[in-house]
Length: 85
Length: 85
Image (cartoon, rainbow over all chains, first blue to last red; front, side, top):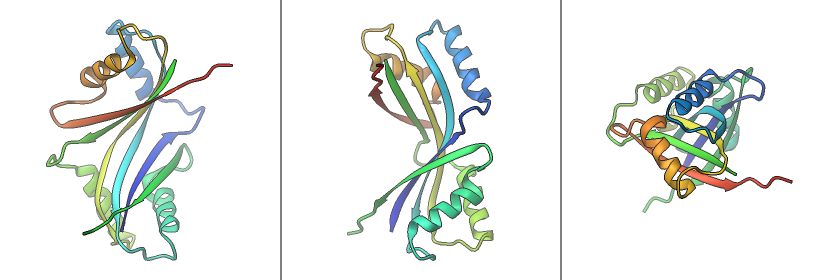
């Protein structure tokens, strides 16, 4: 059983309107020392015993087919073993 | 100059319809070893020299006033120094 954390971010060069909106909101708050704001998604879940050969294979399949849009987004993930007492 | 990564997640007990939708989509893909799916936001930005006394103070203010909704969301963040050549 592993806990998986997936980070999905827009590929470089893809327009990030959410990030731009935050930058504009910040400047109305008189904060102008923030640059390069990027907004992505963060997902976490528990993966029980894997159906495929190894966990990573299943996680990558899920990321590519469902959790991210590979045309415009990149993903990365971390796994940590969950110890059950 | 620091790079800041902010993770915003729903508080425990708050309904997570996006997570539920992903779980349902997974089960239509015949994946049923995934539990506890939670969806949050991930933001990264560059913070130039801080306007307030220290960086953390400004980051927390930004998180509480703009980047998260403290009523239903928790946030955590990481900072890393950006070395400019």
